[in-house]
Image (cartoon, rainbow, N blue to C red; front, side):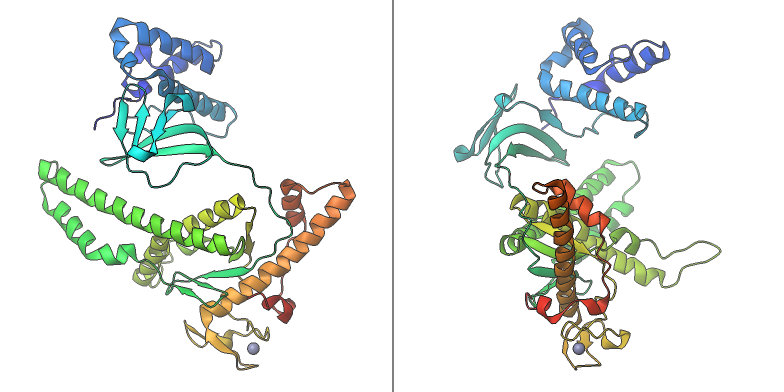
Length: 410
Ligand SMILES: [Zn+2]
């Protein structure tokens, strides 16, 4: 379906566009136009005959666009953002209905009612719980998505929970847990690789600018979106399951961005193994680690838990049984065999156990610091205090410090 709620800013002529009005007002050194002023302009445009089409759409999402414009100007004046740009038609970031009175959900019949559109069929992927706050419509290709923000009961972070699970993110397997489980990657991209290549070839064979090329491009884009949805769905199930069993999870503080920088180098120092590195980059990005971590963090917070990030140094070289640390312990990509005690297991599981031990050590240091802060202030510790206490005393962990006792949680 075509958007009945086109962006009011981009479709307006020059004289009646909030963005250009603001720009010309500031060039005439007039007073800064606030959201309230712009909302008044909007009302006059909705009533003016030449821009009457604006009144075909509901007013609230249009006002939300002006709110975003005001935020953009505020960021510009605070020097935290660039000057607001004109947005081309069709590049809308979504249509937001800010008031729950503007929509109603009929879950039993799978439909939703929106202003000026009436009842629309929808496929509900998740039950809506809590008090409704707002609703946003977004478009991805041919599909429209509804996101509903709700407010649930606030969960205070439980400060006395220590990590019960360590996760090591790998390349061969998606991740390994300290419980000994290897989580295989979904490999959505890998499975769809053949089809992807076929669609890409189809695009490149078509004449540029032709209708057939447009069709092929659209088909390719839809496949990319499908893969992304498959990966996200898989990640959501995985993170939900893990958090349900372990509210506090230790994970390595891995810089995905650093790992995925191109190996190409420059003319003076050309990179080596460019092709191999590109393959590795693709598998890292395909597996969506940062998204996985983001999901773990907010899902843990929702149940009062947290994600503890630990420095990953030596986790792959240290023996989780006797803490002997040696580069020679790692026999191969997948096998860990301790030179001191002979302990042997999957290298990633061993690393996950180390991460859990690190997380427990970090938790204790943090807990102690937070405890001191609480007695000094004579009250309860807020999450902010806890965070600052953790920053003030970063857990400088050396491989040998974690003890056997801490590993008993594995
Ligand atoms: Zn050992």
